[in-house]
Structure formats: C-alpha cells, structure tokens
Image 1: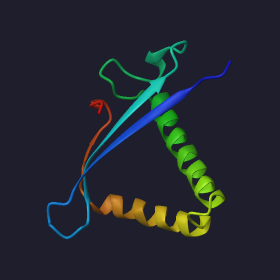
Image 2: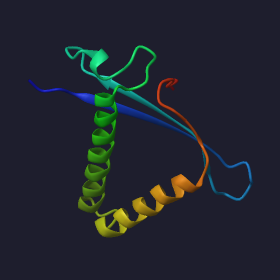
Image 3: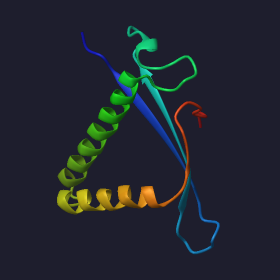
Image 4: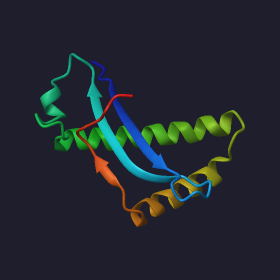
Length: 109
C-alpha cells in the first residue's frame, strides 16, 4: 500500500519598512493524509501533529526541498551547490528572526 501525504505551508510576509525587502510575519503548516489512512495516527484532535505526524512533516518538507533543488538545476535556473548554501543561510536566518508559527490553524487562501 502506498501512502500519500501533503504538507501545506503558508508564509505571510510584510514590507512595512519601505525598503523593498519582505520580512516573514507568520508561517502556518498543515498536514493532510490520503483518506484511507487513519488521520489520528498523524494528527491530534486539536490539529497538532502526533510524533508520527511530525516526522512525516519533516520528511515531506525535506524531500520537497531536495526535489526542488534538483529541478532548479535541471532546468538551468540555479546551481545545486549554491542553492543548498542559500537554503542553509536562510535556515540560520530563520532562527534569528522571530515569527509566529502555527501548526494547527491553517487558513485556506
């Protein structure tokens, strides 16, 4: 049996300092699983992930990033090594900037 998971991330940014740079304000994350899976194994009743759900979110996001890096190299948009360095820098920056994070209250667009 195959299992299909989807992680949706919404990023809200602002440019309120008037300097053409956007800054993250909030990040919302939601985990969806195909209908034949037991949702309670991955998501608690309050919408937060279970331990297994947290692992699925991490793996899905990582596989998505790696796939994106390969795709950008393949179509000639960005060198993969430079892209990985950029991502590492952005991850470091993400811990230096304070933003609101919600893992249970995704508001659909």
